[in-house]
Image (cartoon, rainbow over the protein chains, first blue to last red):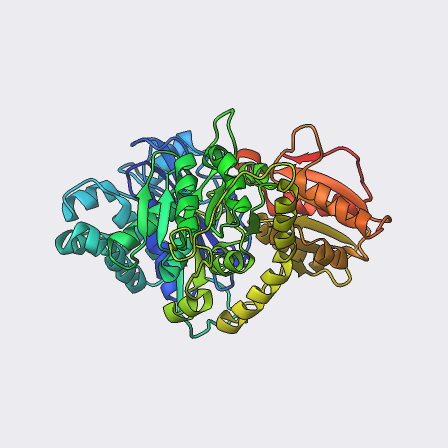
Length: 190
Length: 394
């Protein structure tokens, strides 16, 4: 992580339908609830289910003024491991920074598939954990928990509060509980 | 993980919303009577958010889902002339399709508020942000107010409503498509009561539906009177800048946020200045700070009110500046770009003939613009690299 930078920057690589935008928003709102400043936006192209998509989140203690896209992230999150080779997920990730990948492969295997990669790989089987916890392959909650565990950029409680606030009305109490459990499992995973 | 800084969070109501949702939140507080609207990307978050607000019973605006933008603005003309506060929202081809009715709205002096999520024009088809649509409507007799960020979108929606009604002219409140309309940013919302009191109740003294006092809208005016109608309209436009300053001053009383027709950033001892509108102003401020840290005397002039163009304020701000770069986010095909032309008009009108001005076109069809691009423009100014031709930030 670049401690000299004023703004902490995250890029999410996902396939449309995996819920990257939802977790980007939950994370941003959690940061806001802690009094921080955010920008959160998604890449908008031809949006069909399964197409590669990106979401960006910037978090800072100061107001964020610039509207440039993120090119030098502090952490990268990949929700589908087939994107590791098709997208430039390791760009500007240095030795103290991480790429978090939803995968059943091991970290070394992922590392070898990224050219000139110097950073860390944090692999997590978010699909598997989601299937066990929520009952569907929706990796976003698990990987959001993992992201908080790796970076501690916001408090886990803030994320859970915001997730509940945003989604309880939409998906109901039971599914919200399961998703929160998924976030916690992602957070606690090694 | 984030280093501590001196900024202290104030103890006020703070939220984070997209630009679209922020303008809808302002509309909820204003609670206009009618909103005829037709969906088009990237204006969609505005109407999605506001339609939800109405469906939830938090505003009782009559939303009319029409069959085209031409119909949306036509219905807005009818409703506003009938005597009630009316708003609409659009982008790109939608604004282009409205074009003939835009002149009718301003010619009838109807203070319609239109939110615009500015976007490129076809062909080729592109849904992303630039200012081509708004620039195409710059001479339609509408006031045009640009927003740098989500906070300004919210504030300008409130300021714009008051300004339009005070000036008896329609207004476009402009945000950059996607960059601002779809970006979640922090902002501070005002209490509902303060906004309601600020905009007040709308009264049209010449309401078409007032049967006690019959009036005519849009009659035939031939060569013996059309000219005078247009001069009256221009007279009203001439009062907008002063009205705008008054409204903004009043707005400061309820918000503690100080606005003017233009914003000067690090201009005091600046040798090289960039002039820009909209979301890129924020990016340019970071570029200014970076170069100031290196001891380079650079500054930024942000234009908020583009129509009517605030020549006087701009002239005052640029009086001692010898190196200027103007950044336009639209091509004026076959001529120099719009903002560049206005800056040159200003300098000529005030006989500020020593200044050298470069023209840059950037961000067409959503092309990203980075801090380093803007630093590059400043370096060209400081290196005395002037050119008569338009330069392109690609």
